Amino acid sequence: MRILIVLTIALVTFSCSNREKSNIANSASLKNQPLKNEKKIAELNENIHYLGFINKFYFSNKNEAYIELYFNKDEITTPEYNKLEKLTDSLIYKDDENSRSRFPASLSAKHFDLRGLSKLAIYDENNKFVCNADFVRVEYLNQDISPCFIAVYKTDKKIKSENCYAISNSEKSLETANYKITKDTVLTQKLLTKLNVPKSYSGLENSGTHIFFAKSDSILSVVNSENSAYIVLLKGEDFKVLYKSTEPENINNLQVVPVMKNRLPYLLTRNSKPDTDIMWDNLLYYDGTKYTNAKRQRIE
Image 1 (cartoon, rainbow, N blue to C red):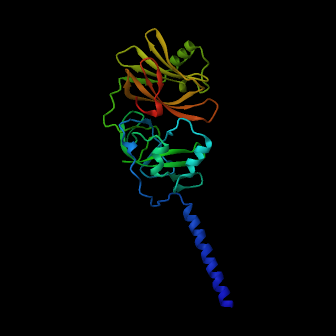
Image 2: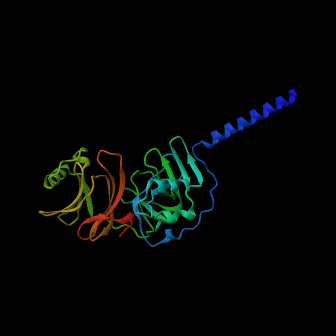
Image 3: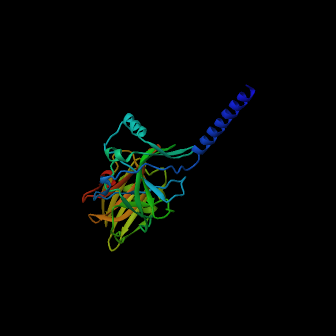
């Protein structure tokens, strides 16, 4: 009887020890779990071009990057969002602050706008080509700030710059830029005075970007006031507002992309609502009369 008790205690201790080791292994930084075979998604190969900022996983050293996805529905409720989160079927990565979960490929196109996202060409802030990237899968990225559904890509090499952007399914080289960009604070103050609006709290240097076109007297300016963002075209003495945000908005990061529409470049922006943590991206293009949002960041 005493031998049986000793053996039982030994087995329980061994089992608990293994369970503890298993739990430690499961909480390790990167899980290289084998994933289910991904289903081919036809929508990825549509002849539509996405243009947006590319993001890196700060906790990963792999050659990978991601973009945030748009839902197929223009508006989604909190219960619907929570249901989508529960559809994930494989844990890819977990640490104390972040987790990545696989979203089934068979359901991805039903819920997310994946049109034209099969392959990305990535460029740095100087519009220099960095590398190509191939679609891997849809994931749910759960993080302390702004969890989101993402498209994950395998890149040809590690992306070093923090301010890269990507164009999908595009084989042609970008046009040669025919402009230069400055942060002229005198011009920023002049425009804010013309607009008759209070300057932004972030100061003049961070509130105005001015695009001077070569062999022209035209200047395209993006400026922030206290509560709004503006795009203004100066041509000689002419002054025309091409964009004013309809809701409280400041443009925090601006990428001028040498892809032209009606002779003016696409503008890729990171935006925020003043005095809040609400942030989002926009792709703006000139429709011949004004700058407007490109729906779901697809090139018009």
